[in-house]
Image 1 (cartoon, rainbow, N blue to C red):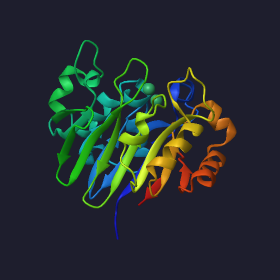
Image 2 (spheres, protein in one colour):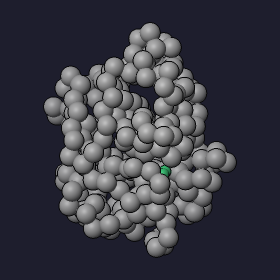
Image 3 (cartoon, helix red, strand yellow):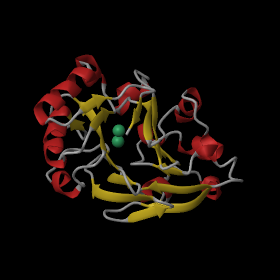
Image 4 (cartoon, rainbow, N blue to C red):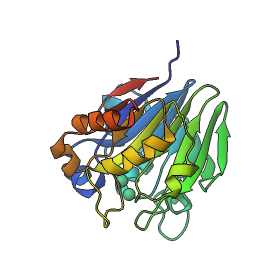
Length: 255
Ligand SMILES: [Zn+2]
Ligand SMILES: [Zn+2]
């Protein structure tokens, strides 16, 4: 029996849903072959880690898809907690350059000691820790933040994370196809050219090409929350034949 799972510490997306806390915004906890990976620690991540029964000191790897605060606000807090105030550094931080370095990084300098290995994401750059591999896939088009799609895999499982960004053709062919689980930040129900986020319409196009074994949508704005994410997930399933669920705060997916 495999013990791999993904727990949602939050499912809010974008300014309004996150900063009005219409849903939680703590990111995702992924356990693959006993390695614990915290993805996108947004506001409240440390609180949700405890609320859902995890221990920050068990975190091996933190992954940040991009520097926007709905994905990174609790990065420092969580590193402080998981590294026991830097005395027991976490194994890896996987993030774009502008999260860690540059003029205005998210990560505080004094907490660099709390991380053994800085893995700066780029297209096709791969990092590994024990049997886990994390690879940057394709640069997304997203406002004022370096953002990359990511593949996280063990010897037997492949998880694909499609973070925030405007849909463009390259996303169809650069991501690996047939993943065990694909997570898609699906912020809006319908397309609008000024959104720098995916809509449910974009997600249908993507899934028809990527063909993962199953998909989960998350990172919801008030627009998609009003239309009911479960209903939208069902529509996606009907149109693409890819089993798709809508994430809920605290939801655990075994796979
Ligand atoms: Zn976002
Ligand atoms: Zn963003």
